Image (tube, rainbow, N blue to C red; front, side, top):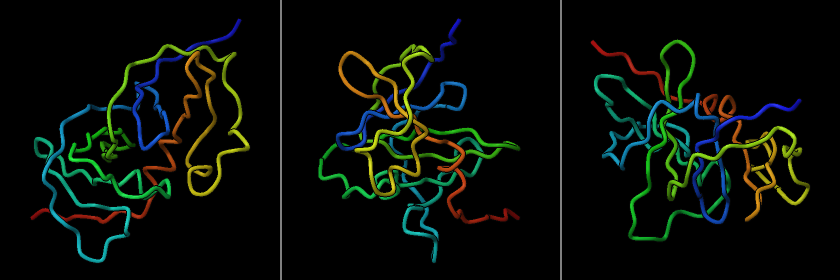
Length: 150
């Protein structure tokens, strides 16, 4: 008997990506950020989410993609971490919550190359294409600034 899981899905460039719904704290509209001097290129800044300081990561940069060339603002997908830590990844647009079957899960496709290959756990075959599953642990483990609040 195979298992199933629900994935929160979104689009970045032409990639259809997803993360387990249990890893998603919330989805919020684009927020103004406070820049972090000397932070890695993928760290766009920090946002204050009801008193929780959250690092905002540029998922396009992490995947080796060019910056968003649209007038549309990206969306924040806030991913839970351990010990009340969370990070936000900016995505081009939000899709649906998708029910998947473990029998449809495949290893990382050989056609996926570059930085994206290291951030993807595998793919689900869906009727309209592949849904790549992001490795939230690797996404969260990018060098992030530490912030001390006095």
